[in-house]
Length: 260
Image 1: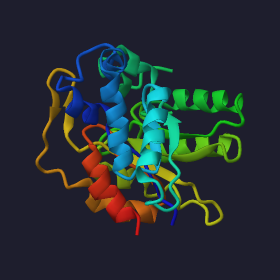
Image 2: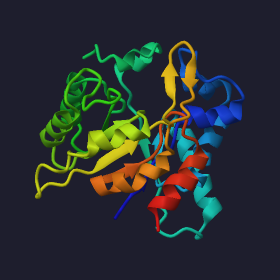
Image 3: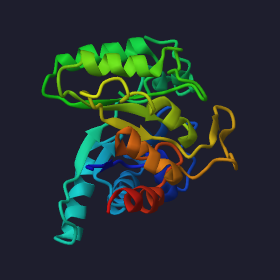
């Protein structure tokens, strides 16, 4: 089973280097590209050292490349089959408003809140047939729906089948509680014995986000690594973390459980 390990929450890990509050600024983590680029570099390196296989690039390509190049020199020949890829993260329109509105789905590849936006992305990708991407959705807690109320399974199947063959490498969910992942992914690969759709999951820590209070701890959350075996059974092949998931979570949770 070929499992690709993603990084965790970039902003969360960055906060361990800058000693400053990440949220509450219109530029969010991007401001540190100008004010503290070394911290951005160190954050990329943290996730590389946590044994990830895909570098989910959130901001500056050159900093990620520098971290990859230095890490390659650091490990030399100590790790077999080491090939780190850099993937650009394309979030929803609402995220640019920095008020949590990407979660209300009121607007027409990551944290996608509505069917129309997903369809638009599929059509855009067709203009670049050599580009590959995954689609990851923002979903309503405790439901089978993405945020705009559309059925998750119907949307992902439609998008996967409408895209150019091989262009969508995975579909799935991100930034939801670990306990909500399985109910959403459970039936995606149940429809046809002749079709396997690779899935992606990178949940948050299970804490609750408030635009006014920030992240609120939820003591009842089961650790996300306890869900990994069932996710793999469902067809998850790309696995990582989102908000409040640190490099140590990737190292001790994902890598140790997924890679023999």
